[in-house]
Each structure stands twice: as structure tokens, then as C-alpha cells.
Image (tube, rainbow, N blue to C red; front, side, top):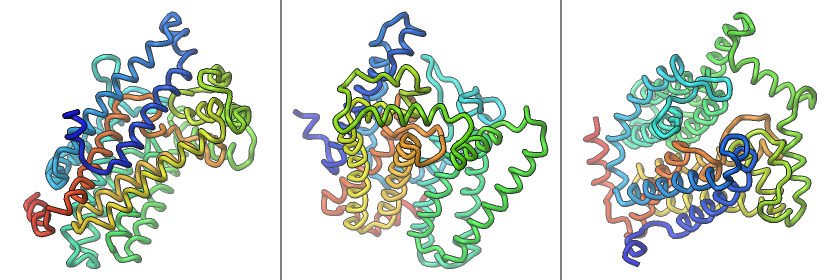
Length: 389
């Protein structure tokens, strides 16, 4: 009871987190049966228990993060951004292969660290902080836009070679934050144009290399062509659609999925298809509703908190998580080409769940101040942000 009394912040967000965690445990247990028989001698509880430990650690991170006043995250993540840049470069050059791309570095206990997860959160924090500091001259190109543009392009293009979808999502989230932060629209469009030109040059350079050195370019080219034309090897999408179609309205009931035996990565990239197969259209709609509630509650927090940094931070983090969820679910139902994005807080994972939990803890930290009737004056927030060099 003491711990429950110590939990502050938006109770609806806490409820969404707990519901997604329960769904995650059930879906991971159901979808890892084939994996268990292949690698763990049929021990079907192994992956669920490992996932449970990861979820518990994630909830602990969330709890600890929500206990910290959100303004104090600013200097920490400001430094972390410049740590994440060399980490991204190191991963690009020396990282372990994950789905035919160097995305992760190894950790103890058979875990991996996807450096783009750190870069995403730190870049959003950096943009929220910088937009807050530059509101008085936000329309100026040299003093406001350029310092914002450079880290966005740097981080995005370090992620791009190994993970196009994450780079595109982070770039889109950055644009949303810049728009909300009142950056001049012509500068935002110029950033979009610059991004398109740089991406075109990058693709052109890769296309001139031998096929074996083009890396993810060929993969993405095939995925997009298959999605647009409906031809080629659409095995993953076809199996996901079979799972969704066979689920019907109420599903086959928990543990009765058959497509988990045929669908690649049913416990991560395509876990939503397994959820719909077992819980039906009603279960899938419930998951969509939970993410929409999360976004709605974030918007409510933004409208109630007077501090600019808290508002930018909340909407940036929430939009990033919900946008990723919608992309994952869009892929599962065949609305988007395959991207490899996990479903936040639901897909089996390690550091991805921990960074999602940390992100939600930061949102809860902001909401806690709303619940306390905004006891952090805007002047106090400005003092912390301005002192962060």
C-alpha cells in the first residue's frame, strides 16, 4: 500500500501501461512457442519469464523516472545526446548484425543495446530544451533554426544506413516538434527539402556500389516494390494477414494461434497480428484504443502545464511512441511496407522496453506536476534550462 501511495502522475497513463504489460506477457508467451522448442528444448516458460523480468525492470525505471522532476532530465540528456552520436557511429562500424544490419552492441546476459533507442530519446529532449530556450527569437534562422537542424540531421543520418524506418520516424517526430515550437514554416520545408536531397544522394551513392555492398538499400527497395505492386516475396505480410483474417471478431482465444508457427518474428515485429488472431478484432481495437488514450492524455497534460519545456517534452515523447505503435500495427494489417519496428511495451525486447518505460516515466513526471497544480513556476523551469550548458 505504501508503494501505491507513492505512485504519482496521470493514473490513466499508469493504467494503460499496466494493461499493455499484461497483454505483452500473454502475447509473448503465446508467440514464442516455436522459439522455445527450437532453442530451449520445449521450455515454453523461458521466454515469458525472461520477458517478465525485463518488464519489471522497465516498470522500475518508469517509477524512478516519474519520481524525478522532469526539468532535471535536461542536463543529463543533453550530455547523453553527444554520447549517443559516437555510439551510433561505433554501432554502424562495429555493431552486431540484426536483421542484416549493424544496429546493436552486445550486453551481458545475452542482451543487446540498440543505440538508436538512446539517440531517439536524447534528441527529443534536446529539441524540447532548445525550443524552450529560443522562444524569444524562435523565428531567426541563424540563432534558432541552425542549432536545431544540425543535431537532427546528424543523428538521423547516422541511424539511416542500418535502420531507415527509425531514421524516418525520428525525422518526422523532429518536424512535428519544430512545428509545435513555432519554427518558421519556410525553414521546416527547407529542412524537409534538405533531408530529401541528402537521402537521394545517399541512395545514389549506394546504388553505384556492387549489390553485396548495398546493404539495407536492396532490402528496402524490394519491400517498397513488393508493397506497391503486390508482387514478389510478401511472405511476412501474407502470413500476418492470414493471422488477422482467421481471428475474426472475437479471436481463437489465448494460446490458440496457428500462424505463430509460420510468421517470422511473431513475438516482435508482428506481435499485433498474433494478438488479433487470438483476441480478434475486438482485442486489436482495444490495443489501438490504449495507444490513442496515451496520446490523448499527453495532449491533456500539454494543455494544462504552463511550463514550455514540459509541454514540448511530453508531446515529443508521446508522439514518438504512438507513431511507432501505429506503424507497427499498420505493417501487420498490410497498410505499410515491412519496417521492423516493435510495438512499444508489447513486443519482446530488452533495451527497447527499457527506453519506452523511461520515456513514459518522463511523461508521468510532467503529469505529476500538473496533478500538484503546477508547483514548478515557469521561472524555475527557465532557470534550470538556462543553466544547462
